[in-house]
Amino acid sequence: MSNGSGKPYNRHLSHTGFKVAGQAVLVVAGVAYGLHRGCTSGYQQERRGGPARSGNDGRREPLSNISRDSESRTCSEKAALEALTARLASLEATVTQNSEAAVTKAELKATLDQAAAAMEERLDRRFELQSLSVASLREMVMQTDKLLERVLVHLENAAEETALIGLTS
Image (cartoon, rainbow, N blue to C red; front, side, top):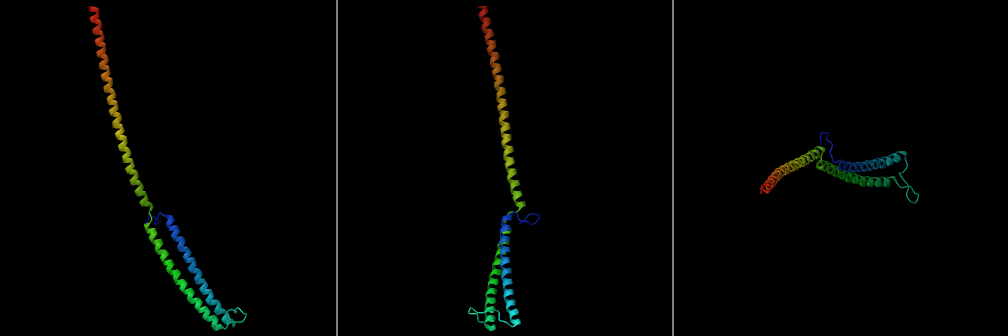
């Protein structure tokens, strides 16, 4: 899942995955370099005619012991390299899985647009209801004014009639 440019939106998730994968690659490269150096240094010293190392007591070890130690070290480093390679494959799978689950910009934009449209519709409906309420209130005030005006006119007429009756009596 990605936007038009192929970049996942959840960059933090991708960054973390790539960081871990990069660290694993560095570890694998370091192990490979160590294996290479360990194998070639023994070979170069053997070509020069000297043993690869001296024992703890200062005596020189026979080349066959050094060769066996080197082989056992190489085997253990190969096993470690295989374990790290398996770990790297696992991390790559995790990064791929997480990047597929990430929210893309297009999905986020569509969701936000949908939420904004729903909110705008509710707001428009609310304004429409308020406008109808204000129109109803205006109509009520006009009717009240007309009624009050008619009551005042009737009161004036009644006062005039009372005054005329009082003058004629």
